[in-house]
Length: 339
Ligand code: AMP
Ligand code: MG
Image (cartoon, rainbow, N blue to C red):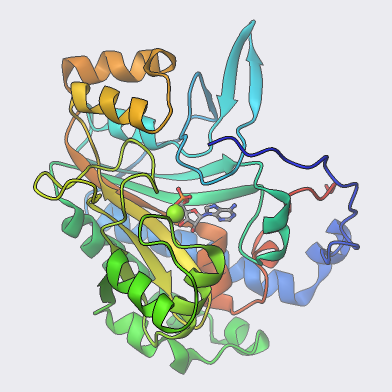
């Protein structure tokens, strides 16, 4: 899908509701949020290394990057005369990494030129990070279990270690009780669609859940919940189709409670060479662009499942701030000219 962006507005940080960088960094609220973010990172690293994951450093650029990024544009980089891209996500490299390691994670920076209208969703940055996890030879539900345990553990660590910060931010630790206990909910994309339509929100059963729909679903839940089985066409070519349910992907999103919206996306990955080429064509991608990836796939890309948790989104949920830019040290909002 190609989205034409209106010319970039010359919005300044203040006009867009973003604090100037010096005021942002010297604000006690920002400092509390970023201390919590630092604890989220140390807890995530502790959990994952305890569970046998190796942290790798992600690539910043490559000849291709994740095309499954609903409506945002990629950023080109001139690599000695070749057009490379900044990583929108390192999903293709995560899959390849499993040739050398069974369980890996990155703390990965991503750049996406999101459509201008996302500047007001309170959930979109043009530059953000993912806690990016991939596991060899497991299924979708195994990856969901790891995501649930990781989120529950990290939130528990913050609640235990950061009472001063949470109090300063007006975040009641009691609101995390269910998340810390785990047992996240689980509904299918079909059920999510029915729930939204029943509430009068138009939601196409064949499409990605829109921003507003995601917020409605999130606000109605008192625990985090998974949405599984997205329709084919709503995601990139690398989400594996259910072998016995054509048109349905074996994937998931994790939605935070309290209206904070999507925290993570993940799924079982496609690894079969011929199927990858078919799926690339079906999603409008030209397989010839994916040289190194398809070379590996031809020889045998490891089977895997995994997920990526948006770090700033996760921080926003834990700290309760009203906009995701407040959970970034150097926020870049779509279309806003800033530091
Ligand atoms: P995606 O591959 O689009 O599902 O992105 C993975 C995760 O990164 C999402 O579940 C979000 O938590 C986070 N994320 C995606 N896009 C953005 C964005 N523009 N700004 C901040 N976080 C994002
Ligand atoms: Mg997603």
